[in-house]
Length: 96
Image (cartoon, rainbow, N blue to C red; front, side, top):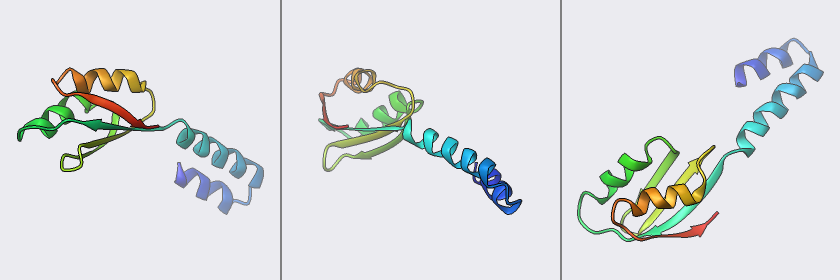
């Protein structure tokens, strides 16, 4: 974490500091951001999507544009698509 990186840099243990930074960078690199075009209809669409996607990662929903962006560490895009389509909406992968 950042506190550990700050601590090791403050102590001037630069080789240890580099290890911490590399580890933090690897954690960030493992995240995957996927974007879907989704058919929205009705007021409950966003709520239904948030409900089925709550455990996959960070969710950004733009109903007006029909866009759902998910940043995840461990859920494959096709599983996310299945969850979205399980709510009765068509979902097309538009970005990876």
